Image 1 (spheres, rainbow, N blue to C red):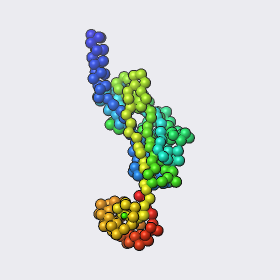
Image 2 (image 1 turned 180 degrees about the vertical axis):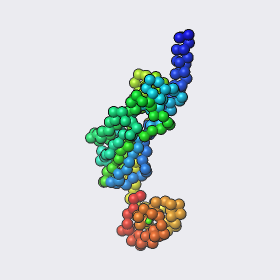
Image 3 (image 1 turned 30 degrees about the horizontal axis):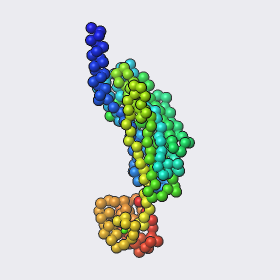
Image 4 (image 1 turned 90 degrees about the vertical axis):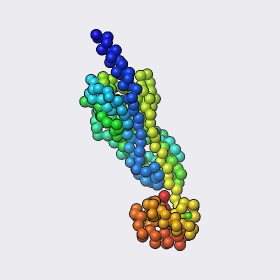
Length: 246
Ligand SMILES: [Ca+2]
Ligand SMILES: [Ca+2]
């Protein structure tokens, strides 16, 4: 009888493992950035406990994570990170440390303790701010990636998903983030061909109607009819007219 129970449990773990997964992704308010801009990056785990039952560690779900943020790209060493915060629900032994290594921006870790995992399909792990190199040029890039592990509570087991998996660890898939510095242009250049010509008149109308940020010629953050006068003024100034980003 005992053997049958063990076999049944093994069969259950085997069949449920196939659907279980974890991955980590990063997001930003925008992928196009301006020199000197500071924006908040969110690191988020997606996971699927695939029907695992509660065990000695509590309810199935996200148990914790630990990892760091690698930076590459043309402005990796001249941009910087700040304000690193681990998600408040990962309240067991949280670590939030900014790093001075130019290729590594931050290190974070946190867990759920022995009161169960965090259920759901996704969970914020941590957030941090990135300040883009003030001297960056259009086309410069900053690529951020997560390297580390996410641990799930699955029944009586803690299962580790790692970007560098060891024995009995699963592979953690990750989606990095590329921030691209917008190129500066004449505000009057509405079609992005690098020139301010009469063709940009129609282009402004198209941008205005579609809500394209380039239509905000006076750069007050609002696309309004006032930008039409601003476009005429900018156009008449020729190549010495105002510069917009993007
Ligand atoms: Ca143009
Ligand atoms: Ca405007």
